[in-house]
Length: 96
Image 1 (tube, rainbow, N blue to C red):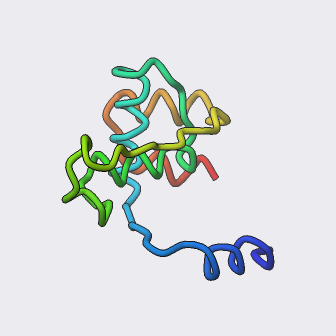
Image 2 (image 1 turned 90 degrees about the vertical axis):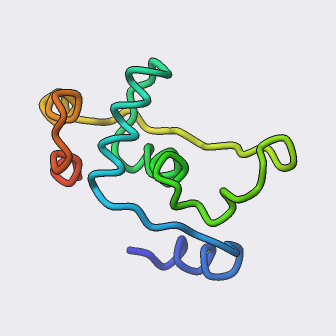
């Protein structure tokens, strides 16, 4: 049921980026290996957009406008995480 979140996004979000399951898997892997964080697919979407260069504001230098990425949600099934860490890119869609 999207009755609340859709309205909030429509009214308050000025820009957005879309990423595919492969980019999300790459971000989950990056979070574990570089940041020591376990993220579920949904929690890794913002990081995926940044790492994939999909964020519309990525032409701004970080010293001009720092970027903050909210990385949340560690509710990922162990077999899905293991598949992602092994290099899988489509396992993310199985995590719900």
